[in-house]
Image 1 (cartoon, helix red, strand yellow):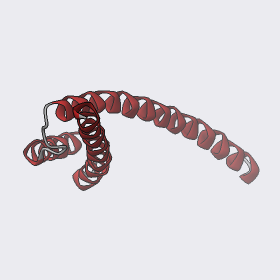
Image 2 (cartoon, one colour; image 1 turned 30 degrees about the vertical axis):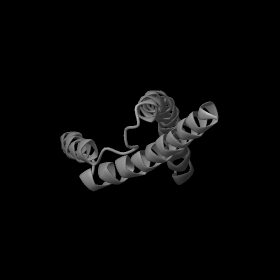
Image 3 (tube, helix red, strand yellow; image 1 turned 45 degrees about the vertical axis):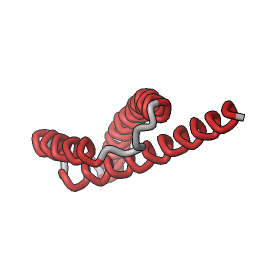
Length: 111
């Protein structure tokens, strides 16, 4: 096999691997969208009942759970924690917005 044939074979394999990565990325986006649908439900529930946007105790339990899952999956637990913290920051921002909207609606209806 020539160097050109080796390179062509490597490029073909690379394209196949990248296609798999693209499929996984698409699945991750869809899973995140589903996750955020549920966190929006949580945020609305919290806003209606005056609960705080964040729940530090739950977040800590989730971090420990995800770190353990990451270890079992041979994924860096620190990466899993960073990912979770990133997602939670976005969720809390949404919850704060919902709480603000609920408070504004209460102010408007009280007039």
